[in-house]
Length: 237
Ligand SMILES: C[S@@+](CC[C@H](N)C(=O)[O-])C[C@H]1O[C@@H](n2cnc3c(N)ncnc32)[C@H](O)[C@@H]1O
Image (tube, rainbow, N blue to C red):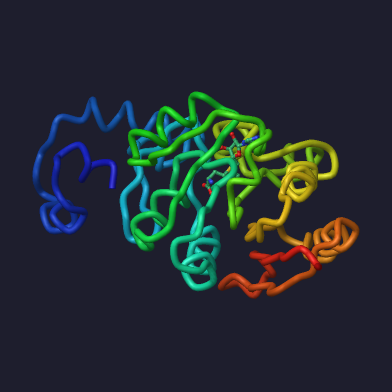
């Protein structure tokens, strides 16, 4: 893929033209980055999410396939014309995809990282707000969608080099428990309904945290690996 990028060709071209001689210095530089553990997506500067291309670099988390389930759920469940906020938009992958797939929605995206917001803008995100979780303007929304940081701090050291040493720490972990950002989102959610991506093994604890805040679980969806990955919550009346 790196060679194809450098040649400006498709991978199939590279495979079919194995005999061609190319200048190796640019590919050497890219390969050095890769062998140092840098994710392929950062070296290429882009990745695919929900069939669209997004620019990515070390300012943002690389969008994951599991997060497509957040978008799918939102597309299905959110009523026409609703006001939606994507908290912790990163590359903008959720907000941009949702706004494209559901042009009837009014989508706002927030992030605490100005650097991430700059990239989200380049990816086409509109209505960007720099703020911590939601700050004061939650009453403006019918729905919250979010893939918040959810890895417990002590688990970060065990992650693959690609993730641990290259992706932004603030995108990975919110603190020791892993649920701090989720708790803060629920504390600020008001009457908005909530669609959250959750981590491996977090379903029960998130359910308990939600119950304690008078939410009930509308739905829990498994990802393709059968892991409960997306939780849909509604404030009990
Ligand atoms: C797991 S990443 C998700 C990025 C993107 N939505 C995605 O799904 O690929 C979490 C994002 O939340 C942001 N974030 C972390 N803490 C935050 C906070 N307290 N308030 C707002 N955003 C926060 C991070 O900067 C990061 O962009």
